[in-house]
Length: 457
Image (cartoon, rainbow, N blue to C red):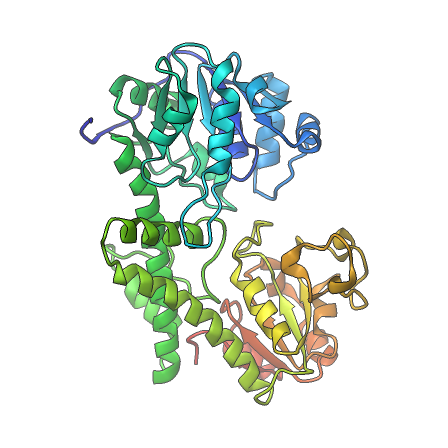
């Protein structure tokens, strides 16, 4: 086991041959960044249609700057896409595993995709290859991959990602730190050297610690969000204003402003899955992690509080009421709806008998067949499961038509520039529940709305 140390980051000796397996929210930014840093990168994925699109420079996910980074890699000849993990790995010196590790029912991470890829690439790896676990994996996964590979001449290293959706390119090119975990210090240093051009601090430790750092980081961020959401609910009870409170809190340099933004709850592909996984890891180790359990429960309570606020403002029952919803992704500037609190709120309202008219810039009604207000996903074949039961709208105004209340659930910037006189006139009742605190309460009330934010007066 090595001792954790930090370094300013080495400059890579030369371009290396890298394979990246998986072209999703982690794999694609990682591959494009490595190509920008001068390495020759081959991405493999089993989705032939997605690979064909990427070969044409078509990026299938919404991520600022990613399309330009991918196209730059293609034009330079340093970034290529192929069908299949084995094809990508054949000539590589490094193979990054960037495949999903979804949450199981008990909160543990499902390693079946990681194991399947390891089994697929094993016969095709050259001696001396370094396999890098980039996916978020449970403690001990490095050993699992080593066992599945069954190759004593191949080294497995943990290199957790810390990418935020919406800013993944920036986070890849300018990371806060690089964490590499391995029993082989030389292999860990080589992986760190791949990213030497970023100049980020390098932390070298053992694989178990590296894997735990990832979970601990996301659990801490989730704790900040659950705390600030609870403080916002306290402000409502006291008659205080959370915006002013957070100014007083965030200027403390020990705390800072990051993740001090109340909302309808936290979601996405990382925080819910990783907090549940860390809780499962703790329980498996015999530790009662009550604090983390409270963080998770607090997030559920925040979603409940938004739904309760809507129900209370429309008269105590949502049954038969039309509710407008702005935003379905878990946050702005991404098309990711995984574990989205916005979807959760919308679906809970639909479950109470509401007609939920939802608009999100990344969810076009035509994408799931049908047109704005006439579209009922429950009757349409091929509708994404999380959208079944919602009425998808073509724009923000259509979501307001005939609505007893409007709920703002994702902080898309375009919502700030809506003509609120027009929106108000389209609504049956001028009620706005702003779960992202996008708007000024006084201005909304002057415009004729009954307005409720989160922790706002």
